[in-house]
Amino acid sequence: MLILTLALVQGAFAFPWVANVQGVDSSILKRSALLERDTPDCPFNPNHQPAAPVTSKYPYNNAKDGKPGNGKGGYLVPAPGDTAHEFRKPNSKTDIRGPCPGLNAAANHGFLARDGITTYNELVDAQQNLYNVGYDLANLLAIAGVGLDGDLVGTGKLSIGCDATSRTASTGNLLADELGLNGHNHFEADASLTRNDYFLADGDNYRWNATLFTQMLEYCQGNCNLEALSKYREARYYQSVADNGNFFFGPGSLLLYGAASFLYELMPTAGGTADEATMMSFFGADKVNGEYVWNGGERIPPNWRARVEPYDNNKVGTQIIEMYLMNPVLFGGNVGRNNFNGLNFSTYIQDGKLNTDLGDNALCLIYQALTGGFPSQLGQVINLPVALVNAMAAEIAPMAENLGCPLNHNSGSSVSGG
Ligand code: HEM
Ligand SMILES: *[C@@H]1O[C@H](CO)[C@@H](O)[C@H](O)[C@H]1NC(C)=O
Ligand SMILES: *[C@@H]1O[C@H](CO)[C@@H](O)[C@H](O)[C@H]1NC(C)=O
View 1 (cartoon, rainbow, N blue to C red):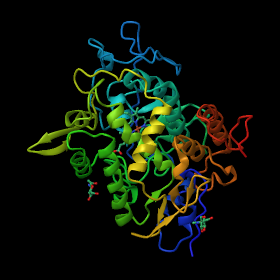
View 2 (cartoon, rainbow, N blue to C red; view 1 turned 90 degrees about the horizontal axis):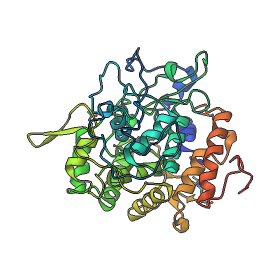
View 3 (tube, rainbow, N blue to C red; view 1 turned 120 degrees about the horizontal axis):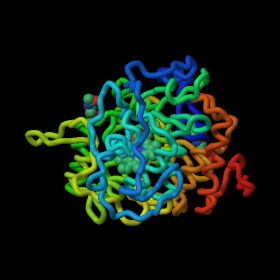
View 4 (cartoon, rainbow, N blue to C red; view 1 turned 30 degrees about the vertical axis):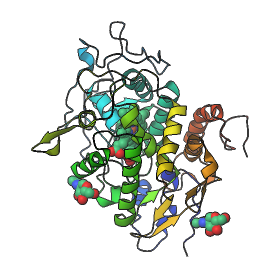
């Protein structure tokens, strides 16, 4: 009888339980053990150029150096005349792209380094200047991204796709294992909108998939709103339960509901809807003879304006919980196809079911998942150094406190939640 006592962020604990189960592919474990560095053929730019900074002529939200900007959207992006932020197709030899259409678009427009080796500050600035993401949410996502997949404690660098550890880690740090955003079950997870499950596609969990994109737009019927995406996410979940013997859907998967809300909160032009043309542009799709095809790069639509009010932690927390509760599914994992086992997590999840009196606390659950209720078990699989976990916890704790979340004992805050 399999006992699932999952207690940490899915990245850290996705596979300890699977590892000991017969017939389950635990090859993911080997990678960490060997500490291989750099994906073979990961694009390489010998002449790395950082993101194009905002200027007094083209200020956008005037967000610079990781500091808060104005938080006032409504402006055109790119600003007319601002060639530094024009669209340029990525070069597959030099430019890394990955599972996140929002960051791929940002890199294609120079809001992040065009070669896809970015930094914490670039991420925080770009999200504010391009999308008018609130400063708190911009930091939360940067902490999760750089913390789980890059170098949060040292260089602050992150590959937005394949493993480029030799370029993201500090020189001489031979132990660093920084997978980039493609890293499976760190931030990237199963049942994505337009990306394959890792184990279903030989590790291609990051490219745009035409079949999935077409399916998504069928659910949307011209408007990728809350209701449509809730139904589509549910459908993707049951596809994974049926097809993917290694399917894992942990507490961190709630982040995927947040990403789905970006389709109607961040991608439409200010005041607009998440219509087909907008989705095609941000997901890098053209239509040829009635079929969607990859066009080589995620792009900001013409005459596009950033949303007027910032999209912040409170707002995304509300969308996550609404989207989830419209079509709730169990948390847990498959041990073989169509053999789903629910998990327990903290006070939030019992036998795979989310506490329905959770209210607005979706973000509290995510905070707890990211910071780990039981730090002694962290590092078992992905070898997150304790210093890193503490750094993430210390940065996230004040945000969690603002939302009134009970804090972990290792949160780095003086307020103890036990
Ligand atoms: C530091 C900031 C960010 C990081 C580290 C990040 C990272 C990621 C990662 C790792 C995924 C893959 C999750 C999965 O498995 O489905 C993802 C998905 C996604 N992200 Fe981001 N993201 C960030 C900001 C943004 C922004 C600002 C947008 C807004 C346009 C965005 C839009 C999306 C969407 C729509 C998806 C779902 C794609 C799909 O499932 O096909 N992200 N992001
Ligand atoms: C989860 O908790 C319930 C109630 O405490 C328990 O009956 C169940 O066996 C637990 N499930 C797992 C997978 O640990
Ligand atoms: C795209 O997704 C479909 C449905 O999951 C799958 O059958 C197909 O193999 C995927 N295509 C690629 C190129 O990965």
